[in-house]
Amino acid sequence: MNRTTIVEPQETKRIIIRDFFALIEAVPNKDDQASIQTFLRYLQSLLRIKQVIPPVVEIMTVVKQNKPLLYHAARRITLPSSNLHMLFQLEMDIMLAHERLRQYDK
Image 1 (cartoon, rainbow, N blue to C red):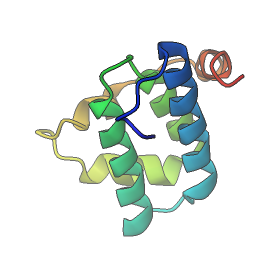
Image 2 (image 1 turned 180 degrees about the horizontal axis):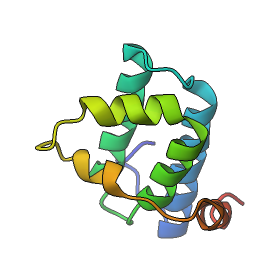
Image 3 (image 1 turned 90 degrees about the vertical axis):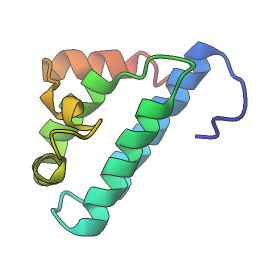
Image 4 (image 1 turned 60 degrees about the vertical axis):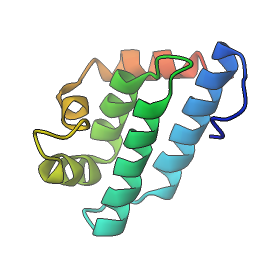
């Protein structure tokens, strides 16, 4: 996502969700270094977004459900002092997460 352009908050969330689903499609459910680094870079980019609050709880819930090997491998290498560590503590009902993400994916 190009963060230098100003777009409406609703459109920003739509872009975040579109990028997330593209990531889910592209990154395999593996614990290899390339997949883990791609996922962690994506999470870092979410934390840098200032215009809106990204749906990180929903995103982490979907990744944990759909890409368990990737999720757990990334969680294992994330240090407790890392700003990403807190993201791996987030969880919610998977059906609610999908429902919330779908409302922006239109």
